[in-house]
Length: 496
Image (cartoon, rainbow, N blue to C red; front, top):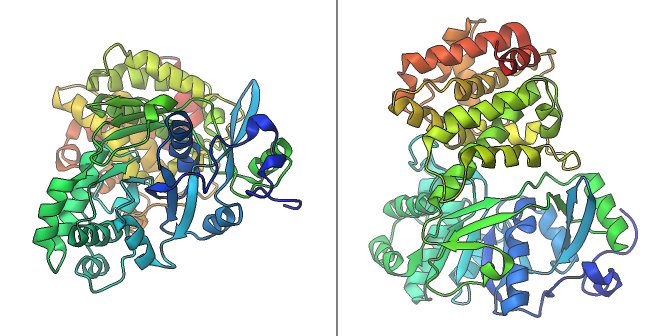
């Protein structure tokens, strides 16, 4: 991309309505964010900038990339500035965001990141690192410990993982008595605050040195507020950068696009203060659990369903998958017959209406959220998005027919072939275990189901041993294998 680039030196050339509400350098940092992806830039960064603009406070964000360097360099060259374009059928609106005060690349200088996390000025640490970075077994919540992580936690290796960075930082804060801090997971994990607390607790139990004193300090000085986050933010494409250039008159190498809708529910447990996120529309509450379970099951679960069914049928985007004959009827029944009976929603919220609204959002033709992007890391997503619904339905004797279809679609997907024979990549932390479970000659659907439910890191024992569930999944897997997704959905959606 050629031409002048977005930066503090050029931002005044941006159309007035698209300029940032605050500018990097005007607000001192108070938040460190782990996970410099598109979602953070289109969600928490936007909320935080609007909160600071409305109510003030030293709440600039230092954003840390735990892995890739390219975006760190792009944002550094732009003084932390980037744009968010909100897209729907009515058009587009682009605005530059100035919430990011600095950027860091953890692999390049992990000690500097630990020092930043341990700095008394850091009073809130937020995370959007995706499910797999927590190193938790999806089915059990136990920390996956290998020799490399054990060495990190014992202080014998440089921190390279999220648990390693957090334990090193909390130990440094404890030794310096650097003041309280809130660690805030903004990832799609069930009970994400409790899960993050579990990561830290399990990791500290393996730490060396003065770990017992650190644990005591953490118990009195660190909180883990739960959250529910929601905004559809597809991975940026060259078209995203072209649209930002047209709107700003400047090149933006860190531009993101998103749907207009956004939601953030946060448990209000911040021992050292927080931005006035409620001024930006966030919901502050005592318990984010009902919101989180609703979103995981009735929105993320439907998203995954459309991703697996769509990618098998050759659909590039979620919106295209939703247009398959019968698809909308099937996922509406999934929400009404399986998800709704499995949870108690927030007061005044209809699960069925929420699910229908989610489908309207997924149908947004200009978002372009790809089926393959949503389908990746399925072993990490399936438990909380689908299998918790299944477990709750089976616990009361229910027959989760439609949830079983989603599980069958995932099982067909991990076999690596679309309905037209095209090869499908398996981008998953458990790819090796999944391939090993499927190794050997072709087998009937029931045998495939039996092989995959033995993945204890995905399926809890009570589900793996449930004959009713295995039969339901096998029937759907047989239909998908024999007839393909399009015919199966058309028949199921018509009630046949």
